[in-house]
Length: 318
Image 1 (tube, rainbow, N blue to C red):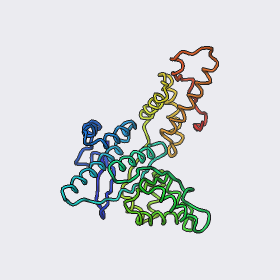
Image 2: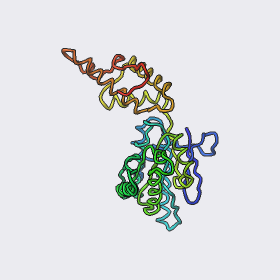
Image 3: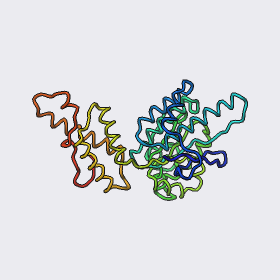
Image 4: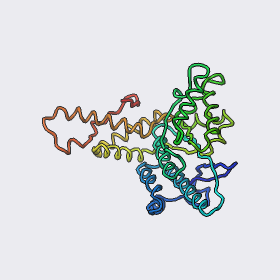
């Protein structure tokens, strides 16, 4: 497991996840997190951790949220005793492939920040380039301002944020970036901005905009799930829908995941792929059940290997 290393630069909190062997302090284990969050005085943390523990993996992200809660809680206690408190920027960069939990974690954070008093509303506004960039001069500024106003009191989550800079200096996306930076100054502490996207593209995006990295001191990496983690996610998704997979079905699913991961290493969609495969299997199961004259409960909840279709080209869109 990796542990957030916190460096303070200019009053901001800068979090990088380093290998455990490079650290003096060990990260919180899930057991330790659960022990503290079960305390009656930490009900806010308990609600957040219950949602997080349903997410497979993401231990570095869970450690980060635990630390942020701890800092906010202790900061409040220091304030109550008249001690100095620290103000730290909570704008963030989420780097990871699709289906790694970025949006889900942003939603959990928005609720926790609302409950602890950092945000007044705690809602999540999810947008992409098209929601911010206009078609003529002045249109982009208007659209971006309107989007920021909707997000005040909550979190503004921009997916594929690197696309704002894809058209060069004359592209209206640059204007959107400038408007966002201005909003961060004008509405300081009134909303949190999260920029999300593929790791390599986000790295290039930040390096090509020198003024941005210091404004987004929190960087969270959402790594691809392992095959074992994806199978665990599949079991959860099936159970949530009142289905279960047979052992041969899980083997077939493993083959599908391994093939897609091998053929699409840079665009692997992780839990999103699992969801698509499970939903396709449910439809195939329904077709298979349609021809039967009667159905037992066991038949209606069991997904078999024949319900999982291995795509010939390795692409699973349906």
